[in-house]
Structure formats: C-alpha cells, structure tokens
Image 1 (cartoon, one colour):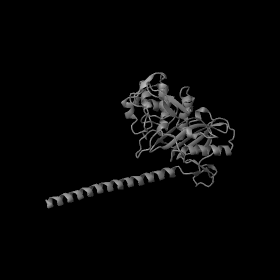
Image 2 (cartoon, one colour):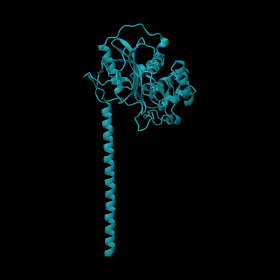
Image 3 (tube, rainbow, N blue to C red):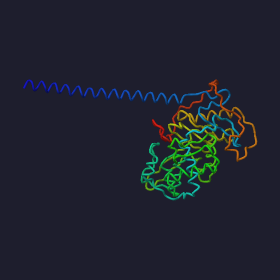
Length: 356
C-alpha cells in the first residue's frame, strides 16, 4: 500500500509538472506574440511618422511613384509617373467602366453567391454575405466607395460576364483608352499582376468621373445600401480622408495589397482649381492622404501659372510639360504634416503575403 501511494504521489507530481510546463509554454508563446505585435505596431507607427512638408522646394511626396496634373493636363509634380506598379483596388475603376459599358440595369437585383466569396478570398472582410440580394446600383456603390471585392463578380454576372470575361473586358477598355502600361489578371485588385502607372491611373479616374452613372458615386461620402430583407449597410468612401480645409475631393479610388502598398488616385479642387493626383506605393495607410495635403499646401504657397490646356489626345502621354519633379535629396524644410491618425476601414486587409 505504501509503495502504491508513493507511485500515486509521483504520478501526481509529474502531472503537475506537465501542466506547469504547458502553462509556461503558453505564457512564453503569448509573450512572444505580444512582442511580435509590439514590433508590428512600432513598424506601423514608423510608417505613419510625421514628415517634412517640403523637400528642396518641392512637396515632400512619400509615394514611390506619383503624378499631379492641373485641370489642363499640365504636370505640377512628378516622380516616376510612368513606372508600372501594382495598383490593387484601383483596378475596380476599369472593372466598373467595363460593366457600365454593358448597360448594367441599375435597379436589377443580384445575389451574392459562393463563387463571389471564393473570388474575393484573401481580401478585406466583406459585409456582402452569401445569399444576400441587392440592387446593382447598391453593388456599384459597394465596389467604388467601399471597395468590396464580392460586389465585382456579382456585377459582372449581372451583365452576363464571368470573372475571366470581365477581366478581358477591362483589358480591352484600357487599350481603347490608349493605356499601354495598364493590364489586369483578375477583376478585383487582389492580384499583384494588376498594374498601371500614376499617369494612366489618372486617365482611368477621369473616365469614371465623366461617366453619368459612375461619376456621382465617386463623389459621395456616405451611402446606405439596402439588401432585400436585411438591415441597411452603410458605406463610407475610402477616399474621404483626403478632404481637408483646403482640399475638396471630387472623386477617387484607394487601393492596397502587400506588393502595391497603399495607393490613391484622386481628383481634387485646391485654391479654386482642379487637380488630379495619383500616389502609388506609399508606406502607411494615412501617408497617401498626407501626400495630398503636402501637395495642396505647396500649390497654395506656389501660385500656378495660367497655361493653355493640353490637347485631350495627349493627356495620357508623357509629353505634358513638367512644372515640378521630385528631387533625390533628403528633406530640408521644417514644416511637419501629421499623417498618423485614425483611418477608415481599409479596402484591402494587410496580410503577410501579397494577396489583395
């Protein structure tokens, strides 16, 4: 009996040791996750750092490729304006143009299905649930304002195009617009093979803004979609953070994936004049909006010359006269522009791999 009791005590102690080891391992793993989260947070804060407003007399734009045009098509600022880069959800501009060309029935109803969810897998969480039925008008707003990936294939289906056919139509559309450095592998922007340039992204945006159906959507700040038999879904335009006291937003589109980073193409009114801006490859969700602010402040402090408009045929070319271009030196001016503040829900959720 004594031996048996001793064995029982030893087993109990062993069990306690195992439990303690497991708890210790769990605590260590939790601590490790905490450190990783802390490093990620530090990196995000670093990406949203304050930067000087001016660099060598020019706006201190942080994007890897950027272009700012005035309403006449003349270059106000340029940095790698014709460099191909992934554009993420800016791809939706071409998708909506291709769908609009098919005379989508705005009041027609479309139901989100499993295929839509599969195509959108890897992007930001969607509020368009499988089985949900909405008007095509609502889905256009979901795609352009909320950048909802599931809205895109559903809209394609409403005009009898599957994702492959829609992608082909998008490529045909940009070719018709004379865009030689823009191409698409799929319709949502999830593929890093969807590429364009700042100059050609502006051409796509101009085409959308000029469209009688799509243009007003890009100008909205807030829109309530009404799924059949479900509560309304409120969409807040992902470009609204660009608006400030000296910047009126006239339309735009954001984008994000791990390769593209944070992107923005936008039409604005600054100091009474219209400007088209494209920023591709920004680090930090808010930095692209900081780029808009830095350019706007520079424009206001540097009155632009009155020049004749560029012929429409040349708006998409590299032949426009450059007024300013980005220098290669380090920032020198001391005027900080805050960019690290809360942002709306991203149109593509950051992941550890290049997906959206």
